[in-house]
Length: 80
Image (cartoon, rainbow, N blue to C red; front, side, top):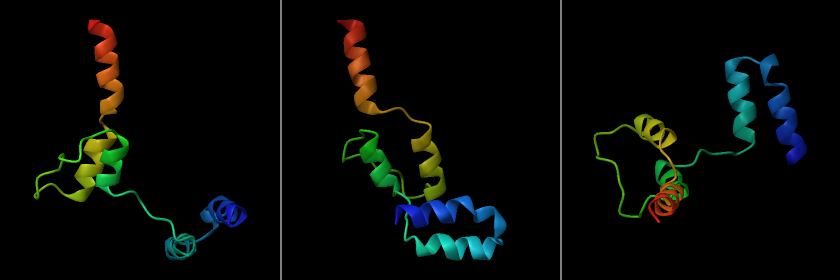
C-alpha cells in the first residue's frame, strides 16, 4: 500500500485531471471532517459551527486556529 501511494503521488503530474482523480480514488483516502479537525485541535465536544457556515469556510477557520489545549497550557505557565 505504501509503495502504491508513493507511485500514485510521484507520477500525478503526468495525467489529466480526470485520470488524477481516478488514481487518487483507488487509494480510498478521505479528508478529515471539520468535527474531526476540531477534535484534533482540542475544541470541546459542545463546539459547533452555525448551520449557515459552509464546510469550506469551516476548514479555513479551523486551519487558522490554534490548538486549544496548547494555548491553555501556555497561558497557565504565563500567569503562574
